[in-house]
Image (tube, rainbow, N blue to C red):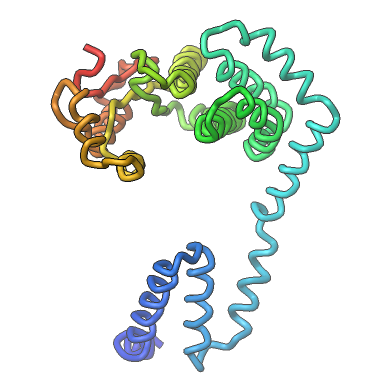
Amino acid sequence: MACRSHEFWHGEGREATYFIFITFFILMLMGMPVAFAIGISGMIFFLQQPTLPLTIPVQLVLTQTQSFVLLAIPLFMFAGNLLNESGITYRLMKLSSVLAGHMRAGVAQVNTVLAAMMGGITGSAIADATMQSRVLGPGMLERGYSRGFAAGVIGFNSLIVTMIPPGIVQQMKKQGGGVIVNVASVAALKGIPDRSAYSASKGAVVALSKAMAADYIKDNIRVNVVCPGTTDTPSLEERMQASPDPAATRAAFIARQPMGRLGKAEEIAHAILFACCDEAAFMNGSVITIDGGATI
């Protein structure tokens, strides 16, 4: 059997593998979604191999229909919509507005409080995101917030469900401790023109991180937050390329950096790694600013 496998890999198997990879990349270049490209490439592989019966891919497809995740997601979405239609969401949102609406970055604060309460009710980040996107999303767009800001606030706050028991924190308690590092932005610490909505969402991340650090410090769980400055990322590159003059836009971004350059993704990653390591064990509830001197 081992010999047959060896022969297969070094002969027809290797050629088939190369062909599948080429097919996959061609499909990706055509703009096909990753999941479909993988599925089509895999099916071609099975069709090419006379020694592999077609019952195998059929069984694999049927097996995936029994996936807990695939079965649970529609039910969680249904739960979120049911809470909306029953009026529970709106009542909790009014309570959240009373508790946090008067605070700085009120929209983000209300969203955070609402997410925490809904997380305790549903226990599902999917249901939470469904509920909030249907209720808070349109309202935020009507008030002039961008879709990106609305999606960022709702998406991040939905993760609260996984960070409160019985989620990540509960698992960390079982293992005797752990480290959580959230990523905000220098915009949470410094006023930036025409970025009030973005700054509010990142300010909420800082506030949440400090609150979690206070909640779980006795459980040997550290929570810190990293605030990067302008970093050279694919997202930033897309924004610059979408401008009328990409070169001038890049020069403007660089000119406002005291160090005369943009940050690098690996520099931010190293800051996060440091916050996680044992050498930083005395760091808790800290805001790590890595912005090239922007907040000096």
